Structure formats: C-alpha cells, structure tokens
Length: 256
Image 1 (cartoon, one colour):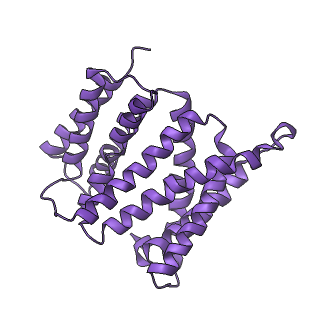
Image 2 (cartoon, helix red, strand yellow):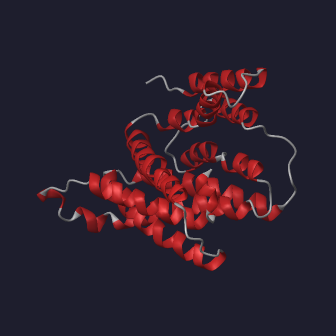
C-alpha cells in the first residue's frame, strides 16, 4: 500500500531498477559466456515488452474499467499461454487439461470476487492485451531456450527505461517517501526479479502447461495469507475457489 503513494509508472520504474540491480548481482559470467550478453538482447527485449507491456496495459485499462475487472481479464493469461501454444504446435491440449484451465479460471474469479462488469471496449481490450503480452513472451521463451540470467537482468533494465518514459508522458513526478521507496524496491526484488527468475526456469524446464494452470493458485495463496493474518474470513466461497484451483491442477497435469 505504501507503493501506492506515488504514481504507478513511477513505482514500476523504481521496481524494475531494483530488479535489474539484483539480477545483475546474481550473474556470474564465465569465459564461455563472453558472447552471451550480446545474444541475450533479443530475448531480453521480448521479455521487457512482456513484463512492461503487461503492467502498462493493466494500468491503462484501469482508467476505463474498475481495477478488479481489469485484474480478472488480465488473468486470462494462463489460458492464452496454452491457446497460443496449441496454435504454434507447442502443446497438444486434451479435454482433461481444457477442463483444468476452465476450472482454474472460475476458481480465480471466485477468489478475486468477480461480479458485475463495466462495458468499456477500450478498457476490456487493454486488460486483455495485458495478459496477452505476458502470454506471448512465455511462448517466445519456450522457443528461445537460452539461460535466464542475462535475459531477465537486461529486460528489467529496458523496462526501467520504458516505464520511466511512460511516467514522464502520463504522470506527474512525486518524491517518494522512505516507505514508498522501500515498498517499490521490494516489488522489484521479490516478484519482479526472484519471482520471474524462478518462473522462467520452471516454465522452460518443467511441465509448462501444468505451470500455466497452477498460476491460478496465486490468488489462492494470497487469500490464505490474508486469512492467516486475520485480514479476511475463511468463507464458503474461498473454500469453493480453492477446491476448484486444486482440482484444476490435478486435471492439467500430464501423464509424464
């Protein structure tokens, strides 16, 4: 909440900057990797458009539709990953896995409190583009199998410049307080840097279809944490959403 004290793109600029610093510190290039930084700029640019595009389109969508609705539409990205994977011949989708995708999304809708929608074609299109940006990058990464260490650090650097440009175009700069700066930095260090590093490794090396569906566990984990610290009650809808997401993960697994 402290990060909300400053404009969204200003917050993202700070977050991506700290994400770049952490991921750069994690790099340990060897003699064999001397040419890797140069080659990594192509996928790094694609990743930057995926990361920055996802956040930018989501923020712009909230200017037309409520944030909760934009979040739900953006959260179609796991479905879009699998759909694009089928189109490009990367996945063979079974009826069981299709059922898992549908159940996972319905469970996420229940957990995120999906309700009445606002009819704004611009807002809906922007929110959909938010999810599609990340889904398209994930499909790109399934084809580009290189290591993540150079790609993610450089994508965070590029995203820093993209978000800074959007901030200057659409927002007024507000000097961040210590709390807002720390919160923005934490966003960059944990979900943007470490979270995307782990996702990239798992998505390329593991069962990418299963991981796409299991992404719907994110609102489940958030809800469980809120219940654990006493900020949310354990309700029937929470239990129903949780059950759907767990069942979705079971259905989406591959036999291998």
